[in-house]
Length: 358
Image (cartoon, rainbow, N blue to C red; front, side, top):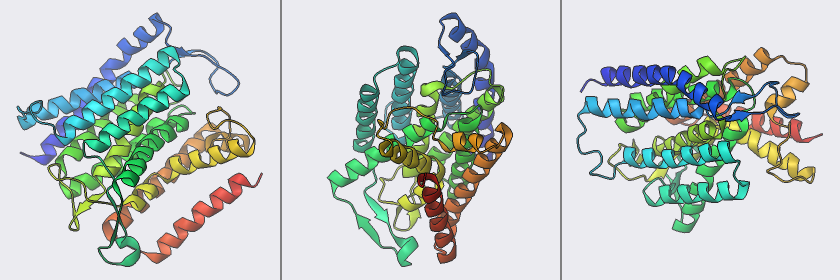
């Protein structure tokens, strides 16, 4: 098997399939009025189809099966593999989001089902069992989590990342572009580690997002909706568990069970969406609003109010995400650096202080 040919097949097929899926999805969405209508909180002024996540999902799933054909993986459905579990879990998340886009499900029902899916992923092996502390202690130390705490942390990690991605989808091309940056980081890391399963997943997502961004950049022709944002968040959340896990100082291959998880690197990697979500939640509590109450306190909203135009906001947020992804990869590959850690810590504290002082 040639890894470079596998990457080419996976990436190309996901780009092409997502691209040719655009028109049918757009027609389907308009026909059945699956559109996102303008309101005071949103930036668009005309209704737009909001099930664009179907484009991403179609390219992702199809490219994975094409990759499996190249790998001659005949026994895929006869074994419960890591890839099989991700496909089943991500499909359930996608269809949950799709139903939400159509029927506007209750927030509590949606969260309840998301947690059920996250818990099922835990029992299928996607779990944060122990936290790697080698970045701070310069050795192979780790903190072993009790199973109940491991279940809680894993579930909140998956559900939290999903919803942070959903909340970030507030400007044309914002989440799709950021998703490309996260996917590129995961593609690079899994490639150099030789993790075939996570590499296929990462490149499939990357290609699908590249095509979707072509139609989603301002002025957007289509929106990804909850089915798209939750799907992307789910894939990224489980990849940060599987890709950033170790066993005896080696990164895990698909056949191994997860042992140590470098959670700190995952947090650095996803600093922007996590920090934006935490800030918004605190502000809503401070203003005595429900944490599920939509508002315009996200970072991209505040930048627009500060006088930045759309292009400047997009470039700034892309650059911020790229910075944190590169920093996470640095910590993951080259290990601990006290100066960089202090700089990261100060940036986070400064952002929180500046965001919450008003």
